[in-house]
Length: 205
Image: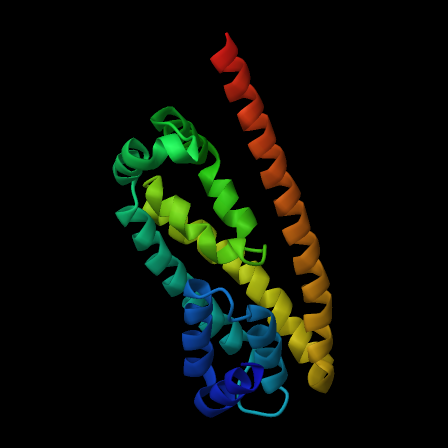
């Protein structure tokens, strides 16, 4: 996949970067950790510029995020309630749980979107719950753009600075990603344990 990505970018320049980053947001297995540093490296031997690569990548990020936001709108709270009515007894999820999660995102969603845009995997998927909670679209765009811009500036600049050694950054990002995934897994496990504990106590009372 890496060879296809770099060849596509070299052939189509800014448009290639825009399209791949937009696709990366919809299909997370495409790694921005390769696209962005290589885009920075391309500025050292082509007519591409660092600001141009950052702009193309940011536009791609925002377009991809908007598409996933739209998916979230289709999976709104009312649809989830219907799913819970049918399958909730298996998943051990109630309508109350859905509304609590929705209220939490209504309160902290803006900062969650901003923060998650610099976390691998979550940087793409966070757009779905934003749509599900009907987060203000303008605020969603603003904070998605800011978060994406920070991520893109860092990786593109590092790629341009490293030059032909740009693959080095992917090794460090890979370590960073593994640490983040481990932390997320621990947090999810802890939340599940705490959630079941309180449900058990509530059923006993």
